[in-house]
Image (cartoon, helix red, strand yellow):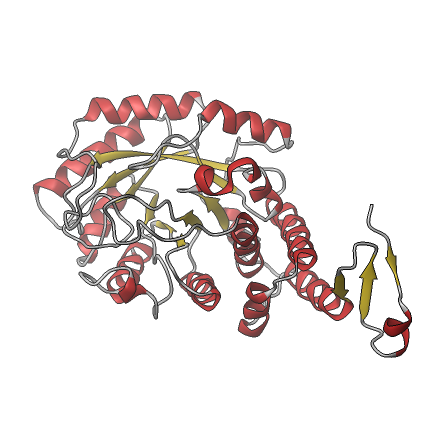
Length: 372
């Protein structure tokens, strides 16, 4: 138990400093500002950039745990105890023309990542069966290439989406890279695609240090084409690539401005052979702080914890929900392993969280006078 007392110096010289039995100090003005920000978000108001930057800069452990507590309260307010689950299936692996420095599937780097062409329908339906048996809401078809254009490959992808939609086993999602032609987005929508993943990856300023074979603007344009077609947007990024706290803050506000629906937060899992292979891992508490900041900036969105979760958070994985996460990628990732789905489901059960997410239209993200 930690007991607070007011030392003489606190009462006379600095009434805002509380001291603890373990000789740590907590700034009462920090707690007051935190409470004001938290109450503002609960009231349905948006926090501004200065508050967001301040949250990302918090460094005292006590302040970060205070932030987590507010993020958890905000998650429960807007999301209740529902957790959105999704899985992915690699429908085309390796040999990607892009040089994203984190990615083992880039043809620019020598890695042990598998390579194969566009898969047939049976593996997709098998993945859908597994997703359904585990109560997973959505299955994303992911392809390692720069993007998709009109032509026979689009026809095949649309056929897979139609079959997946007609199977009724899971919501058909996809991540197929850059879309330059709005007609492509319209075709995907007509085929039954409900949600498309296309991450911004990081801030506009940091992006050239992540990839140089396409631009940040290419990604924003893709999202705009998809939104215009009526497709829901899953877009987030990767932390731990060497970006600053300001870059993470920029990313969160850019996603808010774009009006995305699901925000996947990936934590870099350095892969041998990629330029980021030697990056030092983020501390688990810094990861949780980042998740909490995203929750306060994006209170109505599904904050999804995706790649790199198990290797970076280890025994602290369950704390992502206290930090404000409301969605989870389960099953293996594109090139790395995740912990067994059964373990994730048990974790949710132990926390009193319900994976039977049913808001397919994301209706809870519609702002009313008064949610996400």
